[in-house]
Length: 363
Image (cartoon, rainbow, N blue to C red):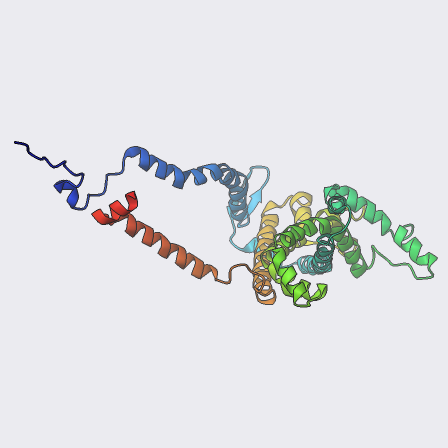
């Protein structure tokens, strides 16, 4: 008599029902914490150093700006907004503010246009591209004091190279130091010489990131180089242009080295022809030893730069179009889709799988 025994199948009764989700062990939790917290740990040294060397001096300056500071005792008493009122009531402040904006416009606008043009030329298929790209960065490597000394001698009123050339051509000499507008042009020329190459390389890197398929499709459609530049290249540079404009605004309104070294006295001219806000701040703080007024002037300049930067941001966003973006979605839409995808993943992870789904996954 024989009996047939059935082999027990793997589908036992306890496994017929859906399995409960496993408890997450400590090692997996540690891995999840490492994945979430390690990026913040890696970037924390910079922010800690910035808080010590950047945020603390800014906050300390804000406190000093409301005090009549005594440098001997290294202390002061609170006087409120008197320092700010004194700065705003001085005619020299408004002269310095006018000179700062004049030099800023004469330097930033031509500098940006020239940087875009040079970057577009370097983006073409030319010989010795690496040589030309490195050459535009040479003025930026030069010391600002050396640049200021060289150009101040070039723009000398009597024996400068520029006036000598103009007189040899039969043109009248220009009073580069006594005339306010002429001095602004000379100082703006120094700034343009030093910073155009730096902005050129930034814009060139952004141009190189534009997909070449766009240009090939535009060439097939019959678009010329000029049309490709305005329809493809320039719209694709929007994020980079915003960065360059904001950094140029900050640097242009904080200009100090060039006006300081434009003559041998470093006070902004006999009639304050090229006196800037930062140069006057230096004279008030280290010339008159009044750190309270200098701190108030620094915070006024900070607020002006912040306001101009926000205005530049909105103007750039409205003027430069988004046609060259790779993704037509807005940032709000992308964030909403990312949150929805994250919620879907969490829901799928917490839902127990059925037996059929497990068998299908095992196959």
